[in-house]
Amino acid sequence: MNYMNQQPQPYAQQAYQHDGKSAETRNLKPGELSTGTTIMAIPFKNGVVLGADSRVSTGTYVANRVSDKVAQLHDHIWCCRSGSAADTQALTDYVRHYLSQLAIETGRVPTVKTAAHLMRRLCYENKDKLMAGVIIGGWDPVEKGSVYNIPLGGTCIKMPFALGGSGSTYIYGLVDSLYKEGMGEEETKLLVKKAISHAMARDGSSGGIIRTVVVTEAGNEREYIPGNELPFGP
Amino acid sequence: MASSGSGYDLSSSTFSPDGRIFQIEYASKAVENAGTALGVKCRDGVVLCVEKPMLNKMLLPNTSRRIYTVDTNSGVAITGFVSDGRQVVSRAREEASNYEETYGTKIPPTTLADRIAAYVHYFTLHGSLRPFGTSSLIASYDTETKEHSLRMVEPSGVTYEYFGCAAGKGRQPAKTELEKLSLNKPDAEDNMTAREGVKQLARIIHLLHEEGKDKPFELEMSWLCEESGWEHKGVPRDYIKEAVEWAKKAIEDAEEDDESEDEDEEMQD
Image (cartoon, rainbow over all chains, first blue to last red; front, side, top):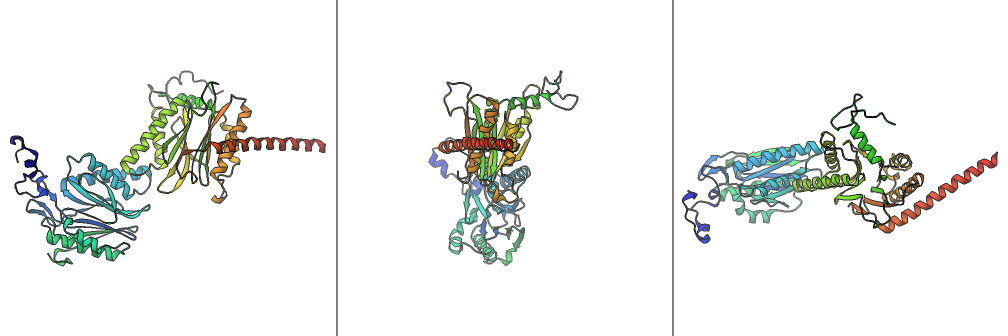
């Protein structure tokens, strides 16, 4: 769309002009990659399970069907990315840098709360220019496993479980009904995999494989489920 | 006294031939001329105390602070040039507030002390600036590790962590007195509590004051302890009064004991 030639229009008309494009692609620049996505993170007794699909699209073209949307910010702090791939990659790089500097200055393991606040600060201060929804999850000695959801705009909320991305809308009901407090590692992993499969089945912008990371005091375990072995078929 | 600067003491940015920067030492002298400040790390908290000489009879009592709250979990007591101290406190407040805004948690004590020290040190590096003429005693509580600590930043920009520290006029006798207190027993349970700390600091200040034959003074005390909910607050006024009364009595009792000891010795002869 050529913004220079647009006539000034009444607000009501402006709001609905989208030429049939989806909500996601409307805000992207032409050619920009979107991680229209399903991401989630659920804390359990000794840590956190983070999960994501792997589809990266530009419009209807799948640019990468096996991307990694779960990024490591620090030894035990991870981040699920959704929205513009470029924006979230840049944000992740900044937060990773600041976290490592902080760890050196304070001499202690940074907390998930700190990582979340750093990310929030960046997302909020630059909200006009960014389109990024992230979920920060990890383990720290103070709070043990915790998850923070940072949707578009830069709110930062600690949650018992967090969902994000375009595919998450289809699975809120499912997760609400299946989630229980105090689940163990295996149960939580199953829930994450099941929920993401269901989202991938219904959301065109989510698909590919499911990547999970289980973060505990002991360390991080990465797993992936290939597209033909999903708990719930495509 | 100490060797005269003889030309190497005109600027902070000049070393003397024997490796000293005289301006920093002179800044420490400025601190040594001011009212005593004491701090103790007790079993269940940190207590800060400053002796404020009443320079003017017309001064309204309990105004003119020397102890400031930097954040809910940190407090700073200053001695030396009060105006310099205010600048340091202002910076400390900024650091604490920025840290919380960026990282979402209260600034850890070591980080706060390091940042204040770095700021104070900066002023010792430039020919166009002078060092701060204050020592700052920092009482702080770490919200993540749940530990309290006491640190002091000197005009040179060094910072150390202490069980007990003193700055100002009476710091030498104060240090001797502090060493007698149970602050560093092998079993942490034997260390004194913050309540006792308040009383002991009041006693030490009054003890030193007699020796100095100085002007009338005010006592300003604050604590950061379990009783205050791990927040930096002024010690309640009535408790300070109680502590001062106890302190005066304790000093009298100690003097009587000394006198009676002397009498016993004479009789033996």
